[in-house]
Image 1: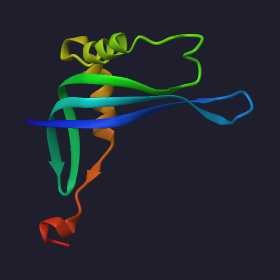
Image 2: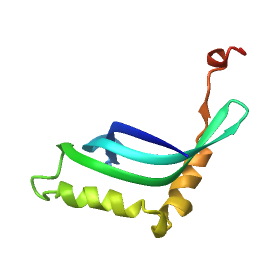
Image 3: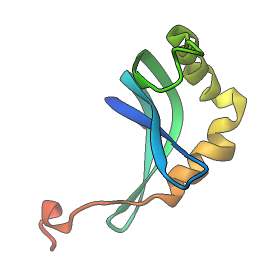
Image 4: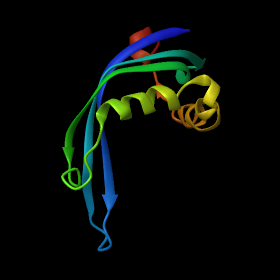
Length: 113
């Protein structure tokens, strides 16, 4: 098992009735920590999440938050709770999606390509 710490921006888009896509919300997720196992098949890696913890979440953009304010502390706790192993969300939904997304390792890094 290995740990990873990262920051990323989550974009949540909506498709409007006319077919156009609008960026509805952007969150900056900071110091997100994952404990993962990397499953290796040849030069293809697959990640399997065991535990996670989100330290800070910031709302960068929201097209509807004037009408519907968001409590970012609540959303931080939602992310920290939903991805707990005992909720089965990780095993039922999250890890199968991660398993379906290969992470290709460039052969030239291992001096075999």
